[in-house]
Amino acid sequence: MSLPNLKTFEVWFVTGSQHLYGEETLKQVAVHSQTIARALDASPQIPVKIVFKPTVKTPEEIHGICQEANAKTNCIGIIAWMHTFSPAKMWIRGLNILQKPILHLHTQFNRDIPWKEIDMDFMNLNQSAHGDREIGFIMTRMRINRKVVVGHWEDKNVRERINTWCRAAAGWNDWQGAKFVRFGDNMRQVAVTEGDKVEAELKFGFSVNTHGLGDVVAVVNAVKEREIDGLVETYLKEYKVVAALKPGGAKHQSLRDAAKIELGIRKFLKAGNYKGYTDTFEDLHGLLQLPGIPSQRLMADGYGFGAEGDWKTAALVRAMKVMANGLPGGNSFMEDYTYHFDPKDMLVLGSHMLEICPSIANAKPSCEIHPLGIGGKADPVRLVFNVDGGNALNASIIDMGNRFRLLVNEVKAVKPKNDLPKLPVARVLWKPLPDMQTGCAGWIYSGGAHHTCYSQNLTSEHLQDFADMAGIEFVLIGNGTTIPQLRNELRWNEASYK
Ligand code: MN
Image 1 (cartoon, rainbow, N blue to C red):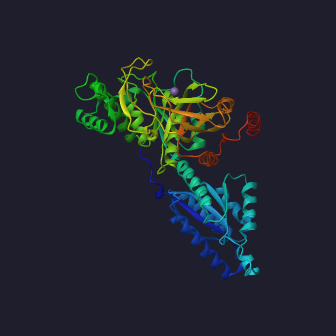
Image 2: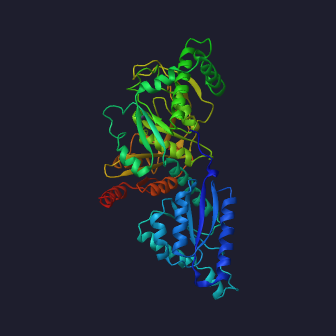
Image 3: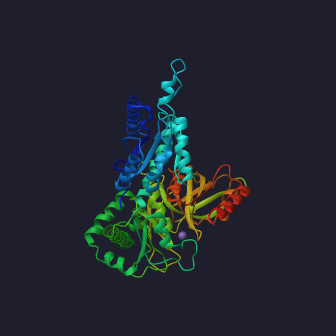
């Protein structure tokens, strides 16, 4: 399932007003909002189509536009702005049925006060400063999650915040009706990768269902030799394949076996219209290897992936890839693996047994084969690479029993200072923010999983917006986080969700 082109999505620009001011004012309101909508639509900062909608002035018009937005499948959200005063009781019926995310753009047409010309007509036309407070009240009164963006519509920062929200809305839209498949169940006895799949479907809109390994093995076994030839050629072209795996090499058959597994899983996912999957090394009946390079390449193509049955992370990886589509950098399934506790330079080494997405690689990955200590299968083929330094984050969804929590830790990735000649897996090094002790302790107090989605190109704001759309708890650990404050936040959230 490749990633959707974000330009196929629409965000509707809806301006609220009322009939009180007369036709002349309403004409100006329409011209202004059209200008803003067009400018946002044309802006390279905005990844989706921004569609101007005629000014809404009555409860019927507001209800109508919300109904239309719900029904339009490629409308992923609404930007609402009150150019003038729009008495907000008019919005109740519409907001009550609105199922799409909403961004409240608190802007005004003119940037500056025209000091010499300003008169009462100008004041009547340009009154979003209080018109937007009225709509703000009703949304707060109705407990509606939304994003409030303040500033002039030509301001770069304002557009960036709209961009962020649009991307979150695209990820949210992608989850609605999405299907994720689990090959086998969970890794035995593991707690954090479990969760309530019924509640997830209610809350998130995606379904998770299991197939026995035999179902995918049948597809793998039906893969033809010439298909394998083709994919092996792709491997040879795209990666630095070690000699043993090359044609004529002692382990070339293992490369062919890996290619066969990739082709089979790919076909299975395509036929079932799945957006992601999980597997587990404890249940590989009929597969020769734990899928390494197959899962890495499927992730790079936009599929969500979670190891050991971790369907929550598989879904999150997929959504984050959709949100980030078109941005430089990548998103990958990740696991906090091992630590460097040098007091002067504390680091986390992130990796997995095999399955790190090459979208975050800093160079052409090398394609290697090494034994895997667990699972009892043949040596799996995998892509090995390093990852560049820079700002990044780890995100994790956990099931708290009475709610889902999206936890984010902002991190600073660092280039490996030493070679890791014996490490047979892709790896990332990072420093958790605000520091190692607070970052890791905060994560553990918050119940965050060892599995995450590691992102080089999304910010905590994308994920905050996303959590708001889903209506779930959001916890951020970053610069400014202190343990006493975080522990209080967790305690207060506990009460808030009671
Ligand atoms: Mn794992």
